[in-house]
Image: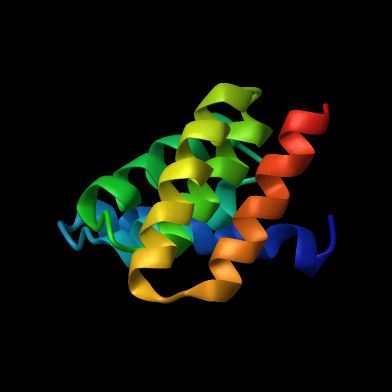
Length: 111
């Protein structure tokens, strides 16, 4: 196992320790979701859901929630997350996030 393979695991362990100490928040949950996306998609999905629930106006949370849902084999959850994310990103003027999630939605519809 290379150092780069271990980095997400070490990061996830550190973030989980912070969560256990009561340091919960949407950015911590996003970090957890991102660090677990490949190794544990179900856990990544759980943390991405928590991030979106904690800050529903955070377009990055919706984008990552969709990615985690795809990794966990839940395409309809991804569709719902990205649809919500597009609405949030438009409202906030986050046009790059709108474009990215619209592309994800088109690809999902094409499959």
